[in-house]
Length: 321
Length: 275
Image (cartoon, rainbow over all chains, first blue to last red; front, side, top):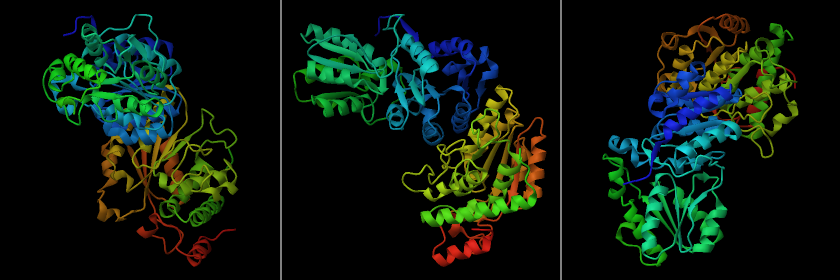
């Protein structure tokens, strides 16, 4: 399906942590018995004294992370995205209310988890996290952006942060010298007819869709909105002004996710049609991750159809009603 | 550090209790019962056992205290103000607009180490602070006060496992075992079993004391400080609402102030001390 080179985001995370461990003596890492999957084990092997495996006890991990951060440590805490959600209240009270520097870097988000099925395919996490005061939310698009985000958080990150990674390897879209800026998006393809704003793997699919749209005479702009909170309001407003139509694509529920946030900005600042593509109030299911995009009407063809309809201001067809 | 004799501690605890009543009566809300039950413990910790300096409240070598049962904020705020972390006059702002004295313990208040209020989280925070102390080769101790209703939260037991795993001998938990929670008596709401045996089996030192006897609180904390390889869990048997007859062992006063001017004056009269 995807022709470009792919790399693991979680491998990039683990390796970057190890690099940063040498630079920042106050950097500590916690995990909840998933370190070989989240790749924090790479750091743990290099710096066993600063790595804490808290066991299958996420509440303990998050409260302990808060205590370490209150004592001046730079904290990274990891587990699968779905399991961190059980600690919502620890995150709210102990981390966000205390407003301490804890970076939650989660892996295995979204439907690309694949065969493990609905229980493990969380598609609500970005919404849940975005609602927390002080929390900032980032969804890196590839391994290069992942490294840059982790570098940024270790050097300049303040307060609580949530970073959403995945099980699958994703296409490498950025150049080696790319630098992440919190609150800024990156336009991968310019265009004047319609803007597709994507998050995570959906940016790669949107770029393929944009190629197909070109053959239909539609010039689509494609933006990677990796910083969900704070979101790049200027890029959204500019897209609304210049292209008049916005489509959002996300490997997440369309409720409280990227689409909701983009629609909020557009409706407040420059109202244009904002059509959202993503999971529609449903759980995932077991299958190969890539098979699920078509199953849930989130594949390249679906993006093409929806974008064309949005551009032509047609009635939304059945699957997207 | 100043040394306080038992008679001084008694006066201080009385002062804490008076202020608890004044604060919740002024706010017309708050949690007097579980604040009164820990007044003697707070007096010992803040005026005898803890290495703290109100003039240097963020000294990296200081001892830390997390009030995990954050609803007992009147007790903590009273102790901190009497100890000199902030003027006692600010206590009248408790639970009111334009005051930092939030209804539940708030880190914006000088001397407060962590915001708390949702039960079951403070012990995990204490584990993190104790781990940091080890990493930084500091000698400080971390004290965590938990309630007996609070230990119904599973997260407490998660943190107990972690404390034992990392041999946090710099971590001292004090359980305010007053037997009462919001809906009634702990023995009816959720029987806790043999807490001493349970916590011991998790790998902790356990010490059981009368939480209103200064000599017992002091000796238990002194013993805990000598631990070389384990965290310590002090089970302090206390009386909810201690010092005010109509509040003692009465679940009604878990979260309600004196109901009338008469109740208010009776409470202060029974607590004694000076205005």
